[in-house]
Each structure stands twice: as structure tokens, then as C-alpha cells.
Image 1 (cartoon, rainbow, N blue to C red):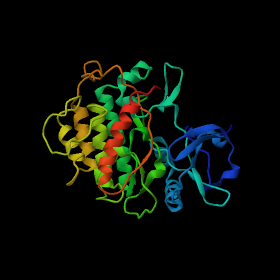
Image 2: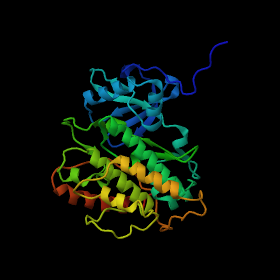
Image 3: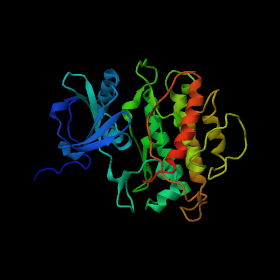
Image 4: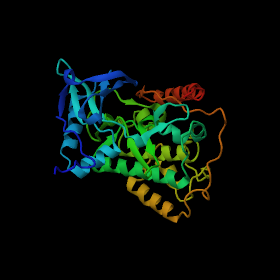
Length: 346
């Protein structure tokens, strides 16, 4: 009798795939710098991300080779946490045309009451009143904290390998509560070695970017930028989706659902200058806060209701500008975008 395949068996892919050999279907889902296509074959488990903006071939090859060098268990972990580049796609001239990435698992797709299916990105956690109206289950405080912990754990795996994700933003973070709280990072072709020299433009989302990067104090996101993103994401999940640091160190309460033990860590993580805590400190603090909680849901403090006009925003890519003018530009763009996005419909 033949041996049944492993539960997480994965199609074998070469490190480089000619674009002419791919059979795609559908119009594709357009983003700011790429279009994602469904692909026939490969057990229906991969997608083709075709670039409109060129990417550095060396960086992509490095990511593909890192994945190919992992043992089976580590490779499975990577595919569960990250939309990691599995193979580089070469165009007719041999240049990079795109990458193959894992298809998003069903657990991260939301079947809305409007009959639409959408990936469950962070906006469905931030704008939870609107999300609930279209059938997305809200998360309890404990579940939110476990989601944040899962994010920190995924980012720490990158940090331990000297890597940094350059575009940590709401549209690049998917989440699920079933069977347990978990996250999936998208746009992992934006991952690079933290000390590498990169000449290509920084493709990032201004409202989520480390101020040190926007002002040019550091040329590209680094490990401190990752900590900033964690602090900002945590505050926006637990306080308000539009929360931003004041730029002034203060011990005033953050409000919302922030546990007292977590507030100093958030503030230290989003400070514009000075040292920031390590991701290991985030894990230790989150574990202590979660362990100290009692109960599982109804008895936990509910998130305050928000305005009925709140809606899930559509997301967009922006180029991070260089120089100190970028901060002002970024804030103005963010303010205008917020007005437009919050009046949009699903």
C-alpha cells in the first residue's frame, strides 16, 4: 500500500522559473508595485507576483536560497508565517519578472456577509465595528495580545537571521483566530539583510514607517524600525486605528485596552530618538501580561464603540521620501488619505 503524503507536503520548485512556463488565469489582483496571478499546477498552492517596479535580483535570490536551505520543519514554519519568495520568475530577457509565493491559506480569508471574500488583513482588527457589520468575528483582548505576540515571534525569527521586513503595514499583516491566533506576513520580498547596501527606492507605507527613516537619519528600516512598527501596531490595535506617537515622552495613560504593564513598552518603542527595547523584551512582557489575565472573553474589557461612519480603508503603496521634508509630507498625505479611505466602502 503506498504511503500517504505528509499533511504539509509541498510541490518541489526550482530556484528560478521561466515566465513562459507559467500558466496563469484571471485578471490578477493589482497592487501599487505588482499584480498577483493565480497559477495552474503546483498543487494549486502558489501564486505569481509579477512586478511593475523592478526588484534587485541579488536580494530575491538570497531569500529563495535561504528558504531552500531550511530543513522540512523550518520550511513549513516559514510558509505558515510568511508569504516567502519560493522561486524567482525570469522574463524573456532573463531579468527578474516576479516571484512565486505561497497562496494565502483559507484561515486568513474572510467570508463577508456581503458575499465577498477578502484576505483578513490588519484593518479588519483595527476597524472592528465596521468589520463586525460585514460578518468578521471580533477578537477579545486576550486574542489581540496573542496575535501581537505571534507577530513579534515572527519578526524575531527574522531578526535572529539578520533580516528586516521593510514594509510592516496594515495591508501586509493577515490574522486569524482559528484554530488559534496566528499571523501571516505578506510582501516578504521586502525582506533584506539589515546591513546590506540597497540602491533601489524604498517602497513603504508612510503612515507606518519609522520617523528615523522618513527624516533620513537612517537610510533603510533596521531592527529598531521593526520595534517601532510593533509598538505602533499594538497601540493602534488596542487604543485607536489612527493613534500616533506625540513625539513627547510622557507617562500619561494610553487608554483603550492597553494593560498597564504594556504601556511603558509601547511608549519606549515608538520614541523618535534614543534606544528602543528589543523584541525579546516584547515577548517577555506579553507573556507576563497574558499569563496574568483571567477568563477568556466575555469578562474581558470590550473595545469602546466607534463612530458608525467608520469603514475599512483601502490600502495603497507609497514611496518613502528622503530628507526631513518627508515627515511633513507623510503626515499631510496620511491625513488626506484617512479622510478618503474612511469614507470608502468594501
